[in-house]
Structure formats: structure tokens, C-alpha cells
Image 1 (cartoon, rainbow, N blue to C red):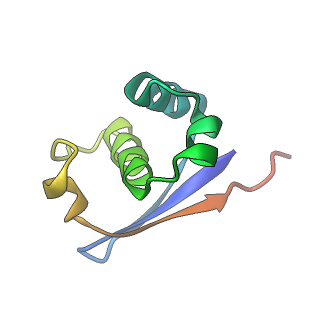
Image 2: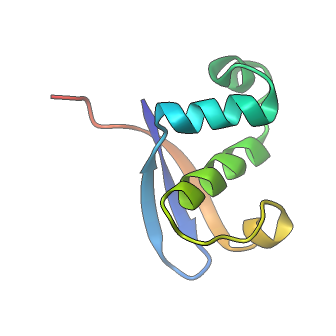
Length: 85
């Protein structure tokens, strides 16, 4: 799996695994398979949506997805997760 490294405009950094429930939510929202979407579309806004969904599912109250939420981000990086032991 992959993870997101989310840096906020406030200076806070957090890491979030892209779990099966996050992939499912993505597919329900974008109406396309997770891996296919990123092979064919490559919209950075989809990565920001994943960041929003990860933060929201972590229990933090976040602004609705859109410009107001994206303004709270400094960067979002997709990274490889540590291999399972």
C-alpha cells in the first residue's frame, strides 16, 4: 500500500495509510477504479481529496472538500508504506 505525507500550512505534518476503506471511498466518489484513475487521469486534486478523506476518517473535523480545505495544505506527498513484517 501507499501512504500520504500531509504537510499543513500551519506547519503540522502527518502520515496516513491509504487503507482499503480509503480506496473504496475514493472509488465511490470518483466512479473509477483507484489504480486505473491514477494511471489515466493524474489529477493532483484527487490526491488532495485523498488527504481530505484520510484526515476526516482520522476523526479530525475538517472543512468540506474544496478550496477552503486545500488552502490548509502546504503539500501532499504519496510515499510507499513500510513493508508488512
